[in-house]
Image (tube, rainbow, N blue to C red; front, side, top):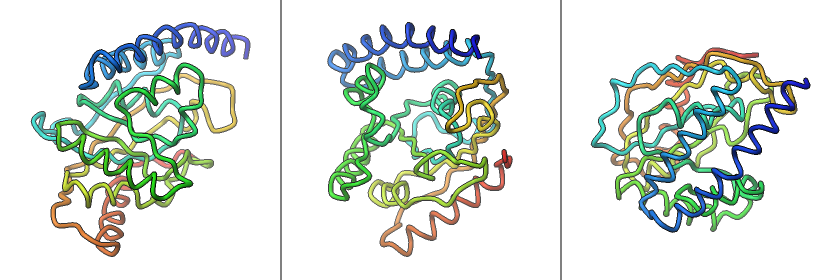
Length: 236
């Protein structure tokens, strides 16, 4: 427990200057590329500090010249650094507004190229999805945690519609991402961080051209959920 607390203290000391740098970069480089590079470096440091390794399967499914909507499960706070380190793409994360209230870390995310969703105001959420669609047309990829929040029991949860409404707006292919072995690193409500080997499994792109309307979006959601479930390791 003492070791974990010391590591949390180190993370805080590292995160504050990195977050301040990210805030500056958000004004200097509007493309978001520098922000993403620093975020990847911060993620690598955090994972290294806790003895967490990341391996990726399915990178051959990615075309470097294409943008994607990455849709994944969500089991741990360590999902974000794992994805930033593991996926070789310019990712813009869609995150809930509550996270932007975290001092330094949240402020940087709010000012950076990420897309903030207000889950309690439908009009604001719709505008955020429009913003994400524009960024993808300009060459960025987007990551959404389709369950909406972290799993409490390590099982794959039902998905929310947001990712699939975005697919409908943009026509960008979806990459299903199964994030395995993060639940026991730091379960929701726990303060003990355990070393682990995280595996990201990237599925084949699922086309979204021509998707329109609630029924089509729900069908797409079921297809993506099934694709992730096939590669997901139950962590309960």
